[in-house]
Image (cartoon, rainbow, N blue to C red):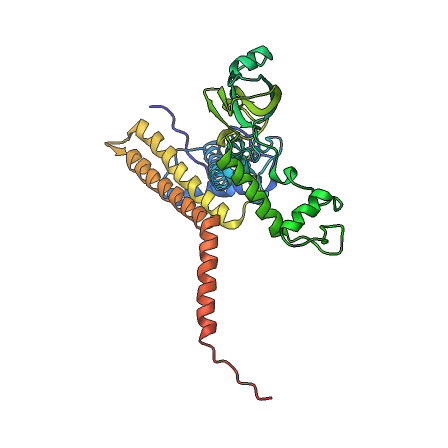
Length: 379
């Protein structure tokens, strides 16, 4: 039978004995490593029973436990703050730093709505102009784009086709009192009274009434200025009677459909959020206690795997059966319980739960204070 290595209760230095060496240079990690190894052996049964592991095995699972704790905390932080992370640079590390809440990502998500509403957004609106010809009512704006060497399909967002504003068509409220203004004032019975340059101001509602009157007159008594736009085919109403230039705004559809709005080197998903492994010295006592327990569970799992391989050890006139499968099952149960405990602890301190707790605390405090008798002051 092969010579099975047995724990001799004399662990060597941990520096250089771990598989990856993530924390080997950490002074507190170097000090805790041998202590954790001895503690795990005694919890498993040493010196009453032999432990078929060496110090390098305990150091490997100790390093794994610290890394698992770091990974669980970092995953929670990523999940908690992902909306604040997306679009930020990947150049800086977030490990051990407070993350401030911000509206940046929400505004970015809303920019696509701003593009369609014409109130902002991340798609450029271009300006163009069309030569309108007398008696020609229909125009192909796709053909206009081709003639102007525009690559890609366009979408018209706004067309400037309307009458001159009504207020311009009857008077200038900031000009001096001329003949036209005086005639207008006479219709309201205000002869001799001026506008913004004389001793009496014309009421603003008078301007509004006159503007409405002109606009309603145009709408009811004349052919209204309008247009019909279907598949970038433009039809103008009424039929143009003169040649003029009409302006419009448009976007290039491929720019709106392009999902790559940001430059390279920014956070896109959970895979490139710059969280690094924690520094062991910065982990507090509750965190280190979880790491010790998880190291013990991993040690049991490893010892169970070793004992399952050998199965039994022959002794004079008999043999000893090793409980490898039982150890592995016990280790699996302990690992699951520890991970569940850590996840529940992290969830309990999430931003949402903290706000809910503050809300309940404020409500309870208000209820308590409500029952305090009000003092009566006699002056």
